[in-house]
Length: 421
Ligand code: AMP
Ligand code: GLY
Image 1 (cartoon, rainbow, N blue to C red):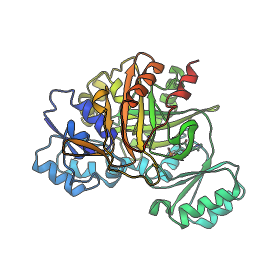
Image 2: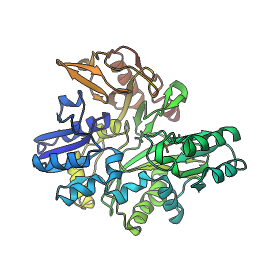
Image 3: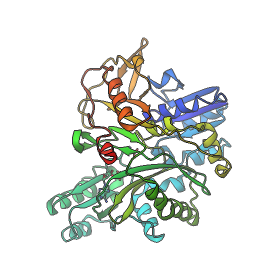
Image 4: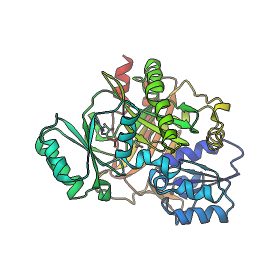
């Protein structure tokens, strides 16, 4: 079987390594992949993940049997629709369903209509009304650009001045482009955050092992928001009791709501949750695997990934049992110093071969050697019987890797381990 994985980061590397475990996966292409993924798949650097025509033509020409579309933007743009139209089976939702991530306004209205717990909110389409509102609303307040913004379209304002300036940044300066034409202004929630990825074929929903992301660039959750500086799984705050509550109040109602709206979701639906004192609430939905959540969740999957994905695509998820290892996992992201703002690339990476499991997010290969290319460069992952052991092993491995100007957080898993005491 020939498989194509669309995307080129650490998440895609984790998906590819998991797919490779199935002997049916004879050939795996990565579109575009990266210099590190090239060790595990045939990369096609000239085809970008958002190139709907390019990906479709490549798959037809190379008789690809199955496509996994991993990133949000091609899904929101309708890549799954395009491939399905050509008769190519896909893992990933059609555009109508990917809207759950593509528009925060859509997601918030969906939750309101179907009584799914989330932060109270108002929607604005003009800056003047948004400004008037934030002059009187409770503080802190959270402002979110409607559309995709590389995970950066959320601003938290502690004061009126900050809130007014956030409205300006999003709606007038258009820092996140057209994504800022509409804005969600919502109540600030607090509590531990949990990421729950799930497999769903639109009828059955199977949550994966829970995880915790570390979004800020610096230790102690300081610094700017990033795409994610590390993850652990499972998340100890997500107890069986919380899981049962989420299933009844959030997961099943979301699947039912999407069906009612004629937007059946098939693929990986990601629930970003906050465990507030009033119960779990949805912070965001994503229409895909999280990055770097996939890097800790997939190594804990005992059932073969290709089998599960095919069951999702073919609408027979209820026929299979998805099993998980009882272990814990930790991913420490090694980034280029300066990320998420400006940083230099092109430094040689050494030491990967001395580590157990490294997913490559941003690197290129020249003469058989690997060089940094991008903000997030590597995800160093270890699994172990306990979370503290997985964290220790991941940091031991991270210490074996070297590239100039390397930056990592030193406290991945710390908050989670506090929950265990
Ligand atoms: P998002 O891009 O929606 O995941 O938001 C980025 C981060 O902003 C989340 O991981 C939360 O830490 C924070 N956040 C988003 N919405 C809220 C909220 N309503 N209250 C508090 N924090 C929030
Ligand atoms: N790690 C957060 C995300 O993938 O959106």
